[in-house]
Structure formats: C-alpha cells, structure tokens
Image 1 (cartoon, rainbow, N blue to C red):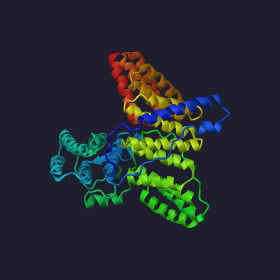
Image 2 (image 1 turned 60 degrees about the horizontal axis):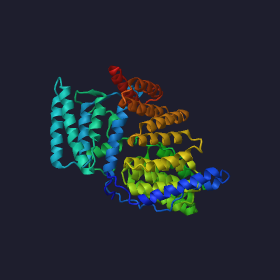
Image 3 (image 1 turned 30 degrees about the vertical axis):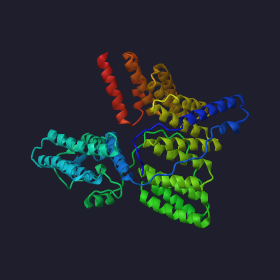
Image 4 (image 1 turned 120 degrees about the vertical axis):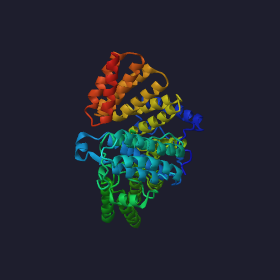
Length: 485
C-alpha cells in the first residue's frame, strides 16, 4: 500500500545527498578543465542502484478516480471552439445520473450518499418544471459536490475539489435544463476505472463507451525516450507493432492483452531485450491511466530484464515521477539518482540534467536551499547539449526556487533565460508562463507598467497556442492591471 502518499517528509539521507553533490561538483569542475576526457565527463554522475520496491496495489482506484475527474474537468474547461461546436449541449439528466454514479464509484458512505441524493432530488424536481430555476439547480449541484469533495479530502488526507471542478467545467458548457434522460452526449460522460463500486447500470454504460483520455500532464517530459528497437522475430515484431497501435488508439486493455502475447513469444525466442521494452510499454499504459502500482511493477520488470542503459534511464525516471507525484520523497529521490546514473552510462546529458532538476524541485518544495546545487549541476550539463527545452526547464525551475527563497532578482533573471530557451524550442505556452511569473513579481513591487509589458508579451506567446485557460488567465491579469493604471 502507498502509505502516507500525500505527505512530504524530509529524507533521512540529506547529509549523504550533500556529500554526493559536493563530489559531483568537483567532478564537473575537473571535467571542464579536461575537455578531451569526454567519456569521463559524460559518466560523472553515478549512483549505486538502490531502487525502491514497488508498493502494493491498494488505493490505486482512489487515485484513478481522482485523476479521471480532474482530467475531464480540465478537458472540458479548455476545449477549443471547434470541439465545442461539434457537440456543445449536455442535458441536465445526464449530469444528475453521472453525479450519482460518481458518488457510488468513490464508495461514498450511505449517510453522505443520502445527503447528496437529497440535493440531487431537489435538482431533479426543479428541472422537471416548465421553467426551472437554473440558479437553484446550480446551487444544489455545488452543495452536493462539496459533500463529495469533503469526503474525498478526508479519505486522502489532502484537500480536494475534483468534483466541484468537474461541475464548474460543466457549467461552462451549454446545459439543456429540460430534463431528458434519453438525451446522452458521449463527449461528457464520466468514465470509471475497472473494479470501482458504481452501480451495474453505470458499469454497463462504461463498458459500452470508449475510455476517457488520460489527463494531460503538466510535468516536464524533457528527457529523450529510448529508441524503440523492432524485434527480429516476425511474430514478435507483429505483436509488438500491433500492441503499440492499440495503445496509441487509446485501447489500453487490448494493448496490454496483445503485449502479454508478445511477452510469451519473446520468452519462446529468448529475446530478453524486446521483453524488457514490452514491460516498459505496459508500464506506460498503466501510468497514463493512473494505475500506479501496476505501472511501478512493469517498470521494475523492465529494469530487471534489460541491459540497455537508455531503457533503465527512462524506466527509473518514470518510477521517480510516480513517487514524486504522490509525495513519496525517498523512493522518488532514489529513482531520480538511478536515472542519473544510467543516463551517465549512456552518455545522455539531457536526461541527467532533467532528473537533477526534478530533484532540485523536490528540495525547493521543502524550502531547502540545497536545491540550488542541483540546478547548478543540471545547468552545467544542459549547456553541453543542444536541447533548448531542457535548458528552459532548468532555468524555469531555478526561477521558481529563487522566488521561493525570496531572491526576486535571481528569479527574474532565471525566468528571462527560460523565455529565451523556450522560444528557441518553439514552446510558446512555456514562454508565456515564464513571462507571466515575471510579471507577478513586478506586481509585487508595484511596477504596474513593467508587469503590463511582460503580460503583453506573454499574451502574444499564449495566442500561438490552443490553451484557452492560459489565454484567459493572462487576459484577466491584464484587465485587472489596466484598472489599476
């Protein structure tokens, strides 16, 4: 079981981490003076393998449910006009039904479920009238969502507003308040993970509908992916390609089923390297759909099966990401270190830089300024590459740290560098975000004109994307500052 998953404890080996960083700094300095020793430089960040054992599978459904609702809320609130025009209307009957299914799926206690159903019954009564009071409908839905979010928060020991966010996202759509339970818009259906406790009707509904797309991750994925080596055996090659196509088509169950056949064939022909890559691909499927325990096991099997350092780098990084996301700090640091180590063996400076930055972010989150050491080494490695996105990620993360530690000037300089690198990488959304963060600092110093200038630049970058939420956020800030001016 993933115990204490929403806690962020300090790791017990800080002294060792500092010692390693000091040793690594010495190595990096020596490598700069000896440019001819390329192999030594690329392998200068090593760490002994001490990966954590994957945790038990319990509680996975909780995180799956939470991620699925968050994904839908985010997807609905950021849809483009083109998508909205295809199927813009959702009937209130569908919202009520999905709300009840959500309450069942997350295992809401009967006493709380009765309260939720009380509010939903009021909604149902209201929308069956000739002229329903829409304000009253929305108010009761918000009250019901508050009950579920309170229950989720208490269960997960972390503040949650996923149900409320889902309702808010729906309020942004065109709602047909004339109750019609036969009017179903598949675009807005809430999907539930297999094995959840929703009623049989909801379960049948889910089985008939395609799965909801996994939440788009806001986490940087800047490390290069390992090359996919196509198997030599014809049958294994066919199964591998077929599985990848199924995964790409968002058919995870069929993809995993076909990958299992590929594993059996890999065993028959003794192709352990392809078997390792299959385990990694299966881990990605579980990871994308928030089945973290299964993902950890698959990544771990991939590591144990392969001799390819690129695969080990990627698998350790993916495991670190999972532990990092659920605030299990010690195993997250261990896997980031292992990713750095194998990336060094593979002479992958970009992957080393990314993992070091991730570690720096962890320590920044704990307000530990040793994070600056990690960013420094990460930057030293990043500048030796032509990967502008990695450079931008390091600079942006350093800016966040400098701001957290009260160094506004250092933060502004870092954000400026981040904009430069993200512009080179053709990442307008990231450039806009860093301009916005710099503008926020200017507002704190009451420099409204400078803040408006930065936000205008941010707006120009944001308009090159389809990120409606980002565009609106920047516009709202500009409007607010315009009133001050």
